[in-house]
Length: 223
Image (cartoon, rainbow, N blue to C red; front, side):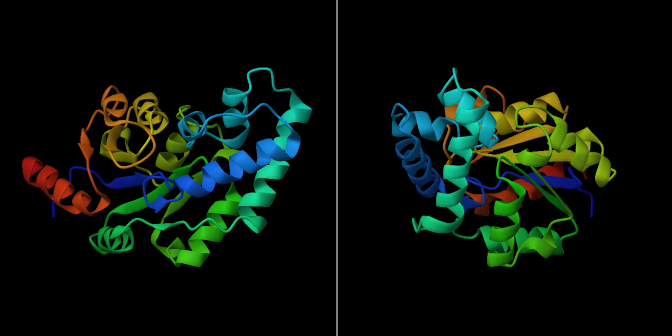
């Protein structure tokens, strides 16, 4: 079967998992814990997708090393151990990933999550075995730097032109652009569609369950 892409790289939060409310809640609690100036929910949503240190600097331009460390420790404590705000895979996400793996695509994850958090949720959801490579912001450069995507492409011996990055933020689309790969935006995540389309070279889908049909359409166009 001809494919337009060999490698599909997914963002995690906001693309496969509906975790926006939990992230915003944990950020808010962390700000309270360290006595920092409050930030609005919109400001907090805007930085989802960045690595934690980069997200903190985006929220607090004056942040020094001690501030970032204190904020990071508070956030990890809330997210990993104390917060019980529900988060779950978007409806149909599991079936889509399973189906694409069965269809022979190489699958990967490039996420702003830390390695510990990603490994934990992949184990909880039972999806880790479906992904051929994963990269996290605490072991590479944060989006929109291309490093995570470039490292995945090297690991899986896949050219940028055969690689599709799927994500819900401007940072995902810019990372794809910076790595010379294709970017497909999802419109149901944290960044508005018009913002995504400024950088999404492959267009957009409105639900994760639309992805197989979208890929099938691209396959037919290159058959």
